[in-house]
Image 1 (cartoon, helix red, strand yellow):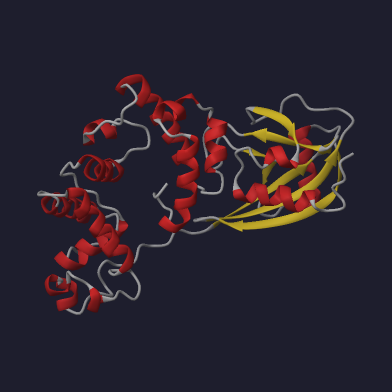
Image 2 (cartoon, helix red, strand yellow):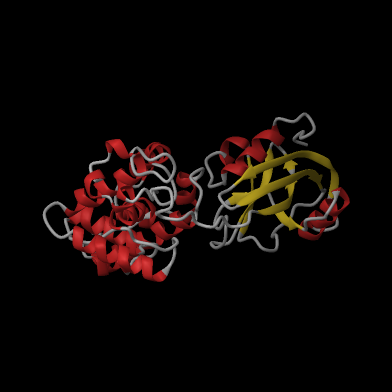
Length: 322
């Protein structure tokens, strides 16, 4: 959960998740839909899918116990070099390095490691330094201290060098190069994703569909949707929904346009009220469909963006449940 997400955001999710899935066996026995529902709102849903897959491997191949070595941990889905090192050192006291963005910034400044983030030579040097430092007592505490130092003191912007315990040994501070080391990572170009979304009410429920277990919102439930081109207007939204749901549907106008910002993407969800005399049995591109009340939908695995769409549209007088 702490991959790409701040501690204060994670804590309440972590408590609820552990209460619901207290052991690897409990997690492995749960459906991916239940796991995603418990994760809903945290984003980066591949983490939840990988954690679920890892629990199955832990139960099947390790008698329900987490491997204690770096190699054993790296054999699990979703465990890369950093996660394996962090878990091995913190949970099992192994002298394993763990270099995340915060740690790399601290080491780069203290030891004057040049090069942009992602540079192969720079990354190799940082991991070598971290591996040398972590040899000794309490390796987990050392790794956590480096992470915390980077997160709270040796920040990328406005670092508080006067409070830093590494101040006497910091090469970047000595040379007046704190602002240049490490150089800023090039920001990826943000991409706008536009979707046509179908709000289909029927007998007190709404039509929901579950995505395949891959991609940005893999495995999650949502109002049926289809991606639009950048230049598609309102007429194109109706055409796209007819292509998705069949030409027998009646499109009764836009109910809401919801916009959300993700890490590297902007979402625009153009939601249109649709009705039909017939019920669909399948929808191309989805694993399954079902009709659900607002109360039930709130307990299913949905992205925060799609949950907002459903709440907003369901409150509209136009979305009468015929």
